Amino acid sequence: IFSFFLNRNYIQNVDGNWGNLANSLRSLHLAENSITEISYYHDQKKNNISFTSTKRHSSAEQFFNNQQTFKNFPKLTKLVWLDLSSNRIQHISANSLPKSLVTLDLSKNLLTSFPQIQDHLHDLRILYLKDNLIQNLNDISFKGLRSSLEKVDFSYNNIEQLPHRLFNESTRVNAINFDSNFITNVPANAFNG
Image (cartoon, rainbow, N blue to C red; front, side, top):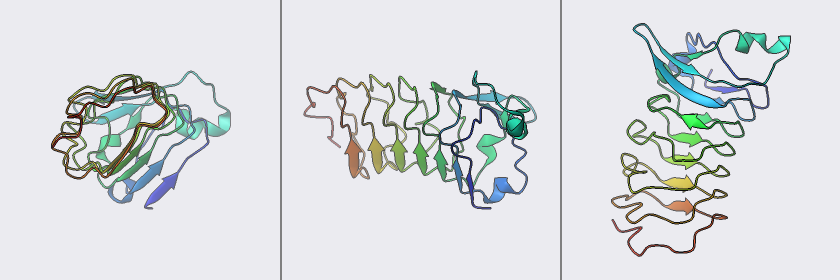
């Protein structure tokens, strides 16, 4: 299996004994579920991801909800596309996502700041963060992503200004979307590089 679609369900937790999927899964689609947080937990034996929510689920969803963790998520080493749009994600912990990601969709969530993924996802090319609650970007938001990032979408957030040197040294970015924010000025050196 290369693609696994679980969109428009009530998933809050997945007990992920991925078996052979860990070596083959390329795209995972969990849009429009009840995920509120992606956290990194480390113990000596395994890496765990916890998706949490307060929403109650029917017995038909117990397969996905019988544990409190989405286990071994970073070990999905072939995963290149992850769709977590239209959930209620408020926080993403560093190192909680597979390093192999090329496309990450976090649109329509409740993120208030840029997720701390820049030192972990060095191959990320496309990042969707539209329709969140992001207010501020800082000069280091894209550090670590600058050599790989090609497209970024920050439309429909609450961003008021672009920081100086936002995309310095970024040679691959070819599409940037800041539509429907509160930006009043673009610094002259925001795109030097």
